[in-house]
Image (tube, rainbow, N blue to C red; front, top):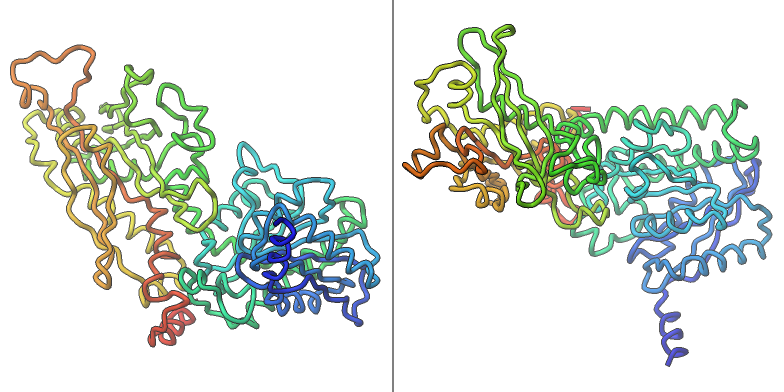
Length: 549
């Protein structure tokens, strides 16, 4: 039976292992690049890209192309398939120990695991349509093998927001521009790393490319060749010393990084405003640094929550200003569960004429984000936030004791959500904004959904109702309580000392500015601008995008 299964598996393999010899015109040092296919993409479909890498490189570059059962890489078979391909290349005359590796999509997951084992001798790796795993980022960047990550801005499977996260940790924080560069190729999608017909999944989920296949391959090949040249130079001089390396290669990679820095800046700003667990807010509930949280209180915070509190406060009279702070917490934390109550507190300073409020937040995420595939949203689905009511900001902060609860009648959560969307649109690049206006599915905003108690509010999630061409309607659960909530609802019954005053709140499940930004860059385009969509308006949209660049 085992022999039969192995025989069937062998027959199922669509492509044989293959290789490309170095170009006769190549004069540089000898090296090899072994390429691992993505899921359901035959290995030979990467040949056009790999040929362009050969042509762009001055190295005597061998290219190995292992192939897997059902055209899908398998981690258990990866070492064997790589060894088989290398033996073929050595038998054909390859005489180098400088072996680089590259991969696409699912292949990037397994390749980085393979290269993390030092005995496998990876000189470096190139990841396309898939980044280094998040486990390498916290508490500090820790991957050992030099890696070039390339991403398409129109990638609908491994979203550009996930590539931005890689840039943030590898380049912006760790300053590993030469050793771990991350470059976004604007206009390229997921499918274009290969060739021929897109897979069924790519037809379903990928976005339309705004470069031709040849243009995408040329840009990718130029960057890959530059990375290989720099790494061969680093190897030959025994490390990353001061010895000069290929100036053209260094300049090429630097230009790609500069363009990427400009492209990802608004995305980074949105995730930092959220206080993303994947960016600047790891120390929150369900973040990688959650161990730093004590009794339900965490060190990191969401700056967007303070913007929302400012919207609730409004413009204060008589020359008074307003400020707010935020802290990530377990919003359901109580002393009964070993935590603490985390409730907004209003204070004032007559010296500075400033009213202040503490706020507390807890984020939630889509299922699948923790698996780190880049396939689902990486932004929080909501920022659940405990805010102070406008009534009590006036009463406790300004001493206006006759302020009615009706001042909290406005749809403050809806207003904050509209502000997050408007902020994201204003910060997105002109080309991205033009594309979204031409082909994006709009966000609209429904009324706040009133909840009659803390547990009901905490258990309710922000809703995203897809109304087709009319847009996606965003609506927030909300809970608000007047100053005299206990007396108004429980009459003469005294409030037990162990129960905090339940008055003066205006809670909201907030739309994250990062979710709004991710919608504008990726998911809001799926309805009309997916790879499988044949919209006749595409040419007009491309013209708008090009005009905005």
